[in-house]
Length: 149
Length: 149
Length: 81
Length: 81
Image 1 (cartoon, one colour):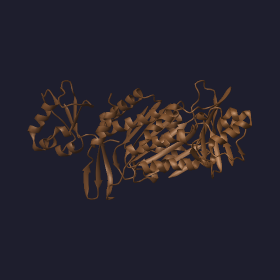
Image 2 (image 1 turned 90 degrees about the vertical axis):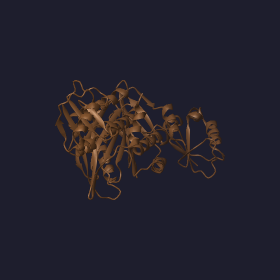
Image 3 (image 1 turned 60 degrees about the horizontal axis):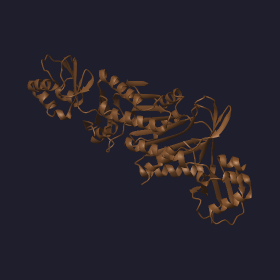
């Protein structure tokens, strides 16, 4: 398991290749990557991502361990950045490796749903004429319902 | 859209990075990679993948177009290899890019479910003492039911 | 008409492709003609519920008409991905 | 007790962290004490249903007891990923 919270950029290609190379017993590797999108007007200067350092690593590890417990996974990786990220930059990625594709897909979706609403990150959109905190979406909170037993 | 059927290896890292870099309007990129697993006894020499050249490219393009129609996707990529692949080698990958993660995940799962049971590939496991065709799984056929309207 | 075989169908029949002159109106009739030829065809087509057929590179059914079709392919259920 | 604020809670209160001496037994009592202090706290805690709280870096509830807790953090719903 590999969980990293960092300000610097990561190389999706290198991270994905390394992850896949390590998982020789698995037939299925799923990755998800979140990328900063511009706003509708195209005026986004950057996305400011704030986090709660003392809590973030612990929270991401807890979510990853939960995924490793609930699905037949060989490995999981989570990288999440903070700081000022420009449109097109990668914010975060998760990767899962499993013998069967259903486990790899479900675990990746689970990780994403929990990251969205339970990991201590907050996003602020800073554009040329405005700065506003991204509001949590009801649909993201609702997505967690799927994983409640 | 990028659909390739090839005997040569592909670089997952390069393919994923290139795909993500092209999709500037999308916030979510999902990839799936299929890797040759060894058998339980650890005796697999290679997986021989046969296909139907005149049909394969057409079938993969039709499945990809269907995904682009059914979900709000910006782009999709499918690479599938044929020939003799050793344990640990990558057999195929799909990638999807979408404004929202739900579309990217669902479209990738749809592509995989259709590739498994509707793209003209057949796998033969060749081990030191045996060679046998991989049987289609009922669960793979059943997985398609989810996408029928 | 070109007739193609893949995977274990190809192995049982012993060749990947052949030209067949036929007046069969449906895939099923074509299968009957082939089965009548030789034992290896009978072995390959023993259980057509375990087989798939494509007409001119499109998945089809054993009841489909062959009129206008140039290429018929027989194979087991696919195992891609 | 260390009290931390994040995102717009931090902006409204005007500082990221402070030490608070309190006898509050629950998170809600702590919030009441803070709100009684100054208008900027009132602005931040106007609607606690729009807020989340973590006790010693674990998500918790506003009814939770503060006994033994060393670090309380207030913030809006998270928007990670």
